[in-house]
Image (cartoon, rainbow, N blue to C red):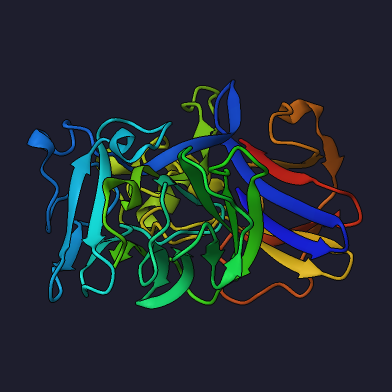
Length: 380
């Protein structure tokens, strides 16, 4: 799913473009596909051991854990039960950090990379929970990076205040685990959503970025002593909205598809329609329908462009053999057949470098309404 948000006085507009391809008798569009996940269970971390170089779960790089006791303190990482810190709503085996006492110089950083950077439409989510604040000199929180450059910093210091890039998000003290979801809605925008730890209203905001999110860090330093000050996190997950395509059963010509796979040197099982050799959650059938590279997980099927009063979905159509339908929706739960049809137009001029046999098309959605989504479906 690709989405873009515009914020005006008392109005928030969100539009999304979701891609679906069908090469059989049944189609499911906009299926969320988990492409990376991890938690602190003993399945992923036998014996409850979590240390530098550990690599539980899938879709992430190994952990890099750096810590110091400072001059007179304690700093490190562990797997433990958040309930000992008075926290509710988390597994009894969760990741935890300690770095105390105040002014000791103790710290711990737990860093990890994404196997594939966060693409447009991808969401990175996790639980993060804190009870007591960090004390007079302490800090705890998490960062999101692109090539080592910080894109997002969420931090708690010596009060109830939690900030994102220095701005108070409005949460009070509380003991309920928060769920944070970071969705890349365009090349230059992240939407950050978080549930409240005190049972109040959730947080949502758009963050402008430059670069592809590719790594994250959970950290703590110089916190006040006591289990209740220790932060916990768990259930890391990276998802994208992907295409579910049924096998070829309609007797359609397959030579163009086979030729397309050959262009990218795919053979054997990697060249099958349902295969996903680049691991991006998009089948070869979908890559063929939308003219993307089935051997490159960074190849994007759609893009979104902001224009005055509207947002534009841009995608490739094959010139023959595939039928495309674009529809608009007020939510993502509505079946595709119940959407309102939108008529796309060919881009003018056409960009250079398009794959042979494809034309770039555009579909627009007005931004004067409160909320809307665009989906494009391809059927051969």
